[in-house]
Image (cartoon, rainbow, N blue to C red; front, side, top):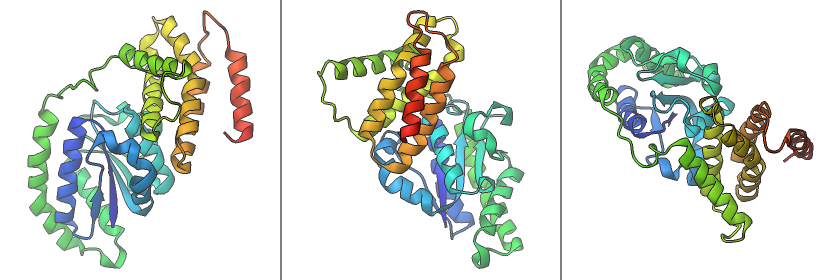
Length: 288
């Protein structure tokens, strides 16, 4: 039985690796899946990842303080909710409180990394096996035997200092500058219009991440205005370059909500709100 494990960030990746190796020791019939490389997620979503997701019965989301608002976590959480019953999608909290969750994560029943909570998850997975499930006494015995191994592997990861690399250390302004340079270059014809799908997805998710942090940019009206002006170009690149229907539909819905959100802010240089709203409504009616 497929178990889809979602992660983002170095600490979350180590946790996902530990869970992937541990689950089959407790329930041999499980086949955990996770992408070993965060960078390849965009390139592979249109192929094997979406196929595995459709075949999965359980979804586990590894949440840490560093990734609760990460674009890939929010995107995969939304995708999981559409393919798997919400009661079978579990955000596992590693140093995070349930009250910290937001967006698509709040619809799921989260579980802290504690023995009793993890045992409930294991019992839920076992129930999904139907006639192939382990007897309760056997499952309890096996869990008691293997729990210390998981705890021994996970606790040091939870305590470790998150290693900031150039990708995670970039500031909001750095990400914004990168988006601006890409869009300006394309507008001037200095780069080819055929952007690779994974690059278009990463660009779009980076933009979404910036908009989600608008609350932290309350003293920067210029950045708010630029983000508002960038909405249609980013959406155009995404729609033009990403062909896989499922990922297009999922991200387009998120982008439409982002468009509604940034309409709350007035552009001090050019009040294009009514025009943007009209364009968005037209695109919705056209099915774009």
